[in-house]
Image (cartoon, rainbow, N blue to C red; front, side, top):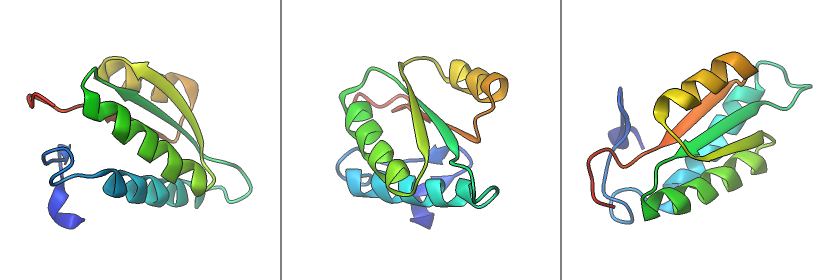
Length: 106
């Protein structure tokens, strides 16, 4: 998975380089990772997405992985990247995820 991740997040073509299996594994890891800080409490993670079709499939896969590892997940649905950052800071979430295809058509 290291080749997909950089300072700008995961990169690749949906269903070719990046699949729902990748998203599920990322969700499992993030849920586990953010639960390590307070093992007696469930971590809270918020997810936003853009309007591309691939965002929906990645959202559901991330949620499956996150909840499988014990995280509480809150969905902002279609929103902007700054709104995810704002909600993380003002509402006390451990992590925020924005699903966006950048300049890709899908």
